[in-house]
Image (tube, rainbow, N blue to C red; front, side):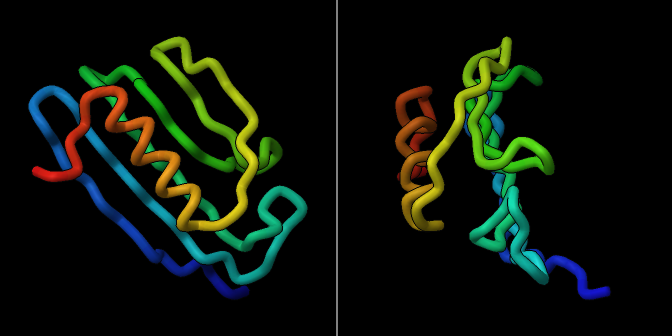
Length: 99
């Protein structure tokens, strides 16, 4: 059976903020992942989630906000839009992409 190919594995720290981005190309599309991608985009502080975008099996594309991880459905259009939306949320929460 073909395995998912890791496309992105990035981790960085700014002060108390931890940013992690992982992205895989799946060997086939599924009902939960019609774009053929699996991803986990995370920004947290002291082990608590500030924002996370992911698409775990059975839930489809969604994001979590705050330490209570309030879950909101996310409409996936393109990979570029996904990353842009995540970048905007991170900046709003104190992450600087210029460092």
